[in-house]
Structure formats: structure tokens, C-alpha cells
Amino acid sequence: MADPLSRVFSALADPTRRDIVARLAVADATVNELAAPYDVTVQAVSKHLKVLEDAGLVSRSREAQRRPVHLEAEVFDLMTKWIERYRRQAEERYRRLDDVLRDMPDAVLPQEGTAS
Amino acid sequence: MADPLSRVFSALADPTRRDIVARLAVADATVNELAAPYDVTVQAVSKHLKVLEDAGLVSRSREAQRRPVHLEAEVFDLMTKWIERYRRQAEERYRRLDDVLRDMPDAVLPQEGTAS
DNA sequence: GCCGTGGTCAACCGTCCGGTTGAACAATCC
DNA sequence: GGATTGTTCAACCGGACGGTTGACCACGGC
Image 1 (cartoon, rainbow over the protein chains, first blue to last red):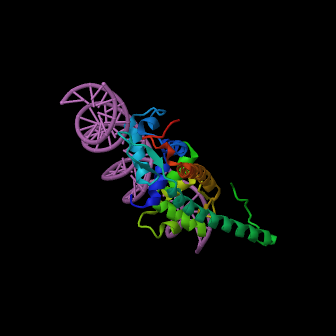
Image 2: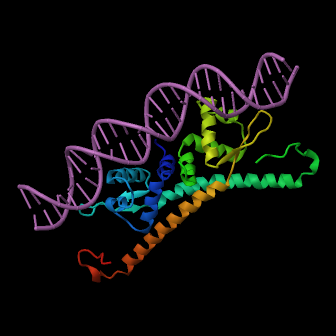
Image 3: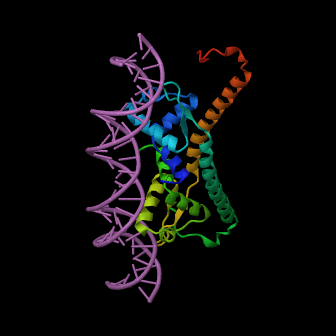
């Protein structure tokens, strides 16, 4: 899976990984520290971190034999930009539709109410 | 996969689905219309729409035998809220670290300054 | 009523994903 | 040097995912 956006979205699609991100927002941590609260092996968490790292969401440095994990905030922008773009567009369309409906005389009343 | 956030992120992790969202931001469309540009069967696109619908990103109404697909903007908020929260936190941490480094006289030059 | 069109459901297939276990690697402690 | 601690690599497993084909359902047009 090549494209960065897919990697980021996909990385955050997993609740455990989102939780890891949440905890890293508070403070850097090692793999073992991160793994502690979860009921999985440290290897599984290491894999999760690899996914987050490939998505550019975290970076790992070296500090003695430990490998502290650090959250990288920049990549979030990629997502927010994408999301905001289409949300704005959709809301714009919605607003315009609203205008149309408001300006519409009851000439074109649809025989059936729109089921929710 | 129960939780809504996972569903939304996961739904947008696929480039085809993101493209569908992008096109729906411009205008509602039917399944066949949506499927046209892609090199896959209409059934595959229907599946994609099911994923987007389960994530709350689109809704399908009924209009004769057509089923126009409509983009729902609200769910985006769920994501942006989540993202913004941790991005702010991470940037805050970054800023604080910056302050620490700036305010630090070379007084504390013993090898490791991580006294709690 | 019957045909054609738009759309979904069901079964299947190959691949990816999250998890495991077991071994290996890297750096520190003694 | 050898034991210990922290982390990753490799192989494997079951389940989900994106895709296909084929059948089916729901309409509107004649």
C-alpha cells in the first residue's frame, strides 16, 4: 500500500494503535512500557509501532538498549487537510440545498416523505 | 469491529473509497455512476458503499429503482475531534520541550538530566 | 403481465492483518 | 566473557478484506 494517506488512516483504524498514540501524546515511552497495559505480547505491540512508524506517526530513537517512541504530529495535518476539504464541500452543498428548499414554493412537493 | 472511530478510519483507509467520498462531495450519485470510472465490478463498489454507510459517511435513499448515494458530513467531526486533540497535545509537548531547552543554562550538564 | 434496468445477496478466492511462539540481535551489568 | 534486559525477526494461524461470478430482488416502461 503505497500512498501515505492510506497508511495513516489505516494505522489509526485500530483501537490499540489509537490508544498508543493517545498515550504517546502525553509522553514518550518504550515498547515495554507501551505494551504493559494491554493483554498482548510485546511483539504484537512492536508490530503496531512498526505500522505507526511506516505511517510517519511515530519515530523511534536509540537510547542505550532502549528505543523510546516519540509521536510525530506533522502527519496529522495530511489527514485534517483531506477531511476538511471534503467536509467543507459537503456542508457547502448542504447549505446550498437548504437555500433551494427555502426558496422553493410548494410547487414540487414530493408525494412521499423521505424515509430516514 | 464495534467502535465508530475505527469504522470511519478504516473506511477511509481505502483509496477507492476516499475517491468515492471526494466525488460525492461534489454531487450525489448512483452506484452505477460511481462504479463507472473504476476498473471493478459494480458489486465491488456496492460493497465499498456498504462500508462507507456502516461508518456513517454516506446514506442511501430510494428514488424509483435508483438508490442515490449521499455524503454525510457530520461523521467527519468525530475524526477531526480525535485528531485535533492529540495533535494539540503533541505540539504542546513539543513547545514545552522547546522552552525547557531554551531556558536551560548549561548549568545542568551532568550526563543525564532526567530527574523526575 | 413481462421485459429490461439498477442494485444487492451469496459463495468463493487470494491476500493482508493482528495475534501467537520461538529464536536472534543489541547493549548493559557484573 | 557471560548473564540479563529490551527489542526485533521469522514462521505460522485464523479471520477479515477486496475482488470476482452468478443468482436474485425491486422497480418502471410498454
